[in-house]
Amino acid sequence: MTASWRESIKAVAFDRAPRRLSAAVLSEVLTRWPTPADLARANRGQLTLLLRQLGFGQKRALRMVRLSALAVEGSRESSYNRPTGLQRSTKEVPTT
Image 1 (cartoon, rainbow, N blue to C red):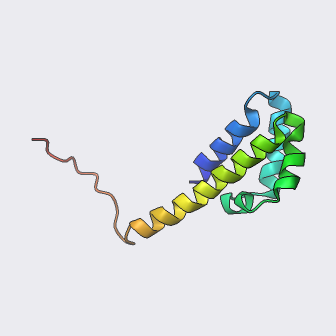
Image 2 (image 1 turned 90 degrees about the vertical axis):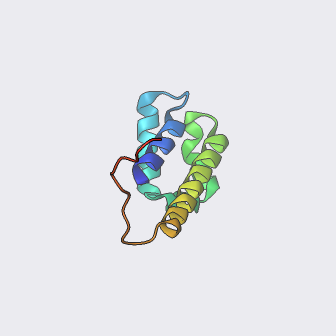
């Protein structure tokens, strides 16, 4: 979950922005808010100020917060839906 969340946040940061600047800003974002839960609860004003130099600061901030909230919600749902101790079967299912 965290890897795909990071890739989504990276995509938001790098979209239509200079690569070097995006990398520096992304590093700062992930330092301040290292988990999906942290970024979902981020102060949007602070996040917008940080992202402003990339352009579309408010839109980027809103997308990052929403993606993070979805990642947190998704991780809760997947932990509720799968009983503990059960693993997915690797057996092939016969076709009819």
